[in-house]
Amino acid sequence: ANVEGIELSVGNARKSAPGGIILLRRQSAPLVEILRGMLKFSTNLTAEVVGLYATLKRSGRPMSLRESAEEMNAWAEQALGVPDAGFADHSGLSEASRMSAAGMATVLARVHSDGRLKPILKRFDLRNEQGGIDRKNPVQVAAKTGTLFFVSALAGYASGPKKQELAFAIFTANDQLRGKVDTKNDTRPRGASNWNRRSRRLQQKLIEFWVNAYTT
Image (cartoon, rainbow, N blue to C red; front, side):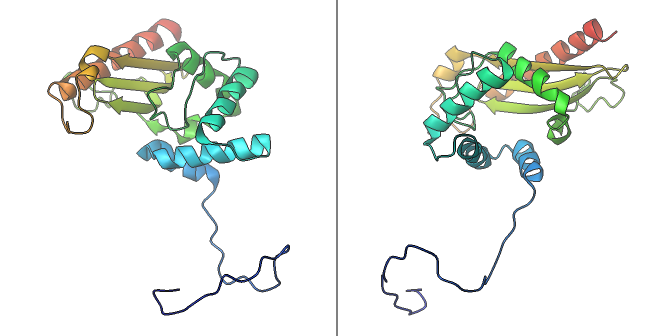
């Protein structure tokens, strides 16, 4: 208002909203579409806002980000039977967050029955020896990636020719190499790209092994 040359007084506090008409209403996309975009583009802010709002709906009161993460940890233990969830936020950006691969796979397996998570996960294309997309590979994967310097994670669902689905979670990291990274100044630490490429290759081999071992 000031930019437009309009001076507004503070006014008096009211105990109830005055009558009037709605000048503008903006309706968001359905939550499932918001979550689909969040997972596809790794939108950390969306993850934090959705997590905070979920806590508000669950508890009936707003909480700080750390308190909200603690509420999510309690929910994971009570509703999903996962006692080792130790998130410090909802996006996973905090290095204080802790979660085992077994715990994450358990979460994925136990929420799979309602059929709402897998359809919004991004398809994860498997690669051939030349690095191109292996379109003849019978293994199908829908998953979420997580990548930092010398850290690579992949969690989701995989199926083979018989369509039996497996929930999986793979966390790989090299703490020694990551500890040498200056996160404020290093835009591309030496060896990070090659390390992540080898990690992704390992992830694919593990998924293919699990599908062949447990769905045939």
